[in-house]
Image 1 (spheres, each protein chain N blue to C red):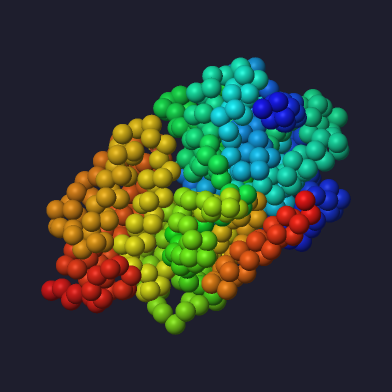
Image 2: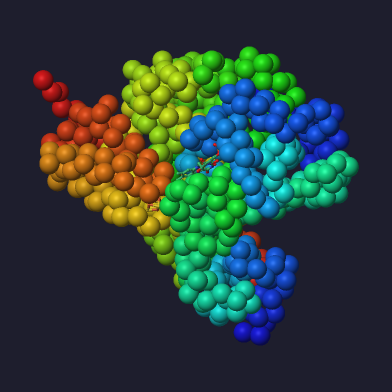
Length: 164
Length: 430
Ligand SMILES: Cc1cc2nc3c(=O)[nH]c(=O)nc-3n(C[C@H](O)[C@H](O)[C@H](O)COP(=O)(O)O)c2cc1C
Ligand code: SF4
């Protein structure tokens, strides 16, 4: 918790401690967390620092769909389910990811590596179907590309594991 | 790319030198040193520029409203939320020429007497956000933002803010709530934002594409500017085109082209061997038009006559492989998810629409369901608090009008596109 407190304090110092900065702070706290979410402890610290109620901080964190108050995978795969993507192969892409990861949309893999979610339009309609994985967008997907994508992330993570 | 986007991709987006060599900040200098503030507003009014964010409100009039407010502080907001599904044109402008958008903001600030501005960019564009922050910092260092801009009395600064994935935050009052650090729920109107906006102060909210037009109007003059486009719709429009066309992407066109010309001449026609079935104009909140209506011109007056809006200028082209009900269901699920829940017609209406649509798609619907859908849609249109609930039923209503037989077929247990889990085939009526 102390380590968390220091991290959050330095984020707030950088962004500012007025209540209007709440969303920016939540985005950054989530981004820096290993599990792509904002924990209850983090919300407590933030609400104290910004002098707002915990329920307000929680309310905002749960209103915006990019923010999560539940643990998520290190890689959050967001499948665009807006019409231009979803009508253009997005539905199949969802199925490829579900099959290859063995989870359905809304779930996380047991190893904590992947979460699968829907997202609204990500502005890549000319490269439909597209998904967003953390901050990166991947377009023109098909079965092979989905498999390659998941493979490459898994390999990258294995390499990282060895270095510990 | 003919006018406002012509520098995008041609210059390095963060090179002030490139921008200035291509006429950058000439309009600001003209506005600062050669024009009175009323003249700036008059010029924008005379140009007939209409908002490019969806509502097509006359920009000059909006400037005048905010300018006429008396207040110690006024704000300007650049709406870069671009949440309308199928729309990706603001991103091209933001990534391609951020200085030009900011120049539009500075000129607007001068015109209305604003001292502080925000660029509210959607959280889904993190790289673009970083680019904008850099652009703002460069302009601060070079004296185009901050105190005494270019040695004059004008003081104006800009902050970049992000959303976090909420479509409703593109609506200007919800956007303001979000900048204030709250849930993005739309406010009751009046008061209007021009009168009481951000922190209760007069606020000008404009779309990215609207703002990027301003420097051109000032440097060309409204008469020259009006040579682009048609009588009712001057200038150009960026269209975001997706779906079954060969060349998808963002294109800047002059107003007055027909949808068919755009698809055939600009997008290289249809990519598949199938026929076009429909075009949805304006994103998920826009009207769905059958192939017979493709000779409509992109022109505010012409579209108005048919009761259609241009919206954000998104164009989704669907071919025969798409089932209209499946398409509408995807659209309506989006609205159900994005409804902020503040008012009953939208919160409940979207839920009921989805339930009924699912029933029909599963082959369990009845004619009574179709009547119910129309009733709910009309109610939402008339009584929802903000534009989200008011425009959510558009796709449903227009498809029920132009593709009525497909709804009826589903009720009888058929899906002609073979998408729904029903018998494949069309029913011949009459
Ligand atoms: C649900 C909803 C979403 C909207 N999203 C956007 C958006 O993403 N970008 C935008 O510029 N305007 C959006 N608008 C329109 C804004 O409320 C506002 O009219 C616009 O920013 C005004 O700018 P303009 O006059 O330059 O078009 C949205 C409106 C509604 C009701
Ligand atoms: S119309 Fe929908 S989005 Fe708008 S205020 Fe009502 S519930 Fe919220």
